Length: 186
Ligand SMILES: Cc1cc2nc3c(=O)[nH]c(=O)nc-3n(C[C@H](O)[C@H](O)[C@H](O)COP(=O)(O)O)c2cc1C
Image (cartoon, rainbow, N blue to C red; front, side):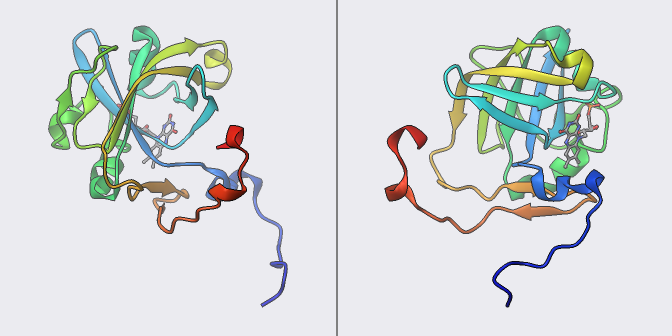
């Protein structure tokens, strides 16, 4: 086994396979009395306080307009138990179907926003649109998480991480290096 892996040229359009952060989330929304859900892999934590999360929502998605117009959404964390729903929700449009009904999911009332929580998910983060400056240019929304609901166990849920082409990696082994971290970096 070489000390350094040998690398070869790789198509830049496919670096998602290595850089896409995951975990895959389900983003629920509500607008004019109708609810919807989309699958999302393109999100990133941007700040702790306020709790900011940036997300790319393509403007062809039904969710784009629902979230932009309502200024709200809920980011829900599914586990591998919901893999089929994750795929189905990401390959259908809320313009033509009711995804809660179609995929057997339960919409629970949120505390701070109108968009519903997905009961079957491990965690749900209620979000308000914080900054839409890059929405027209990159479909990039910056949300503030205004309330978070998290299941007490398992501590490390088995989440899905997308590598493109219909293939997911699953979170697994835990490595703890807490003793080497500065408190402010935790
Ligand atoms: C694994 C996976 C990840 C996805 N990630 C994103 C994403 O980050 N941003 C996005 O705009 N669409 C993403 N999609 C596509 C949307 O989920 C898909 O277009 C969905 O049908 C949109 O639903 P809607 O039209 O009801 O809003 C993803 C789909 C899958 C299957």
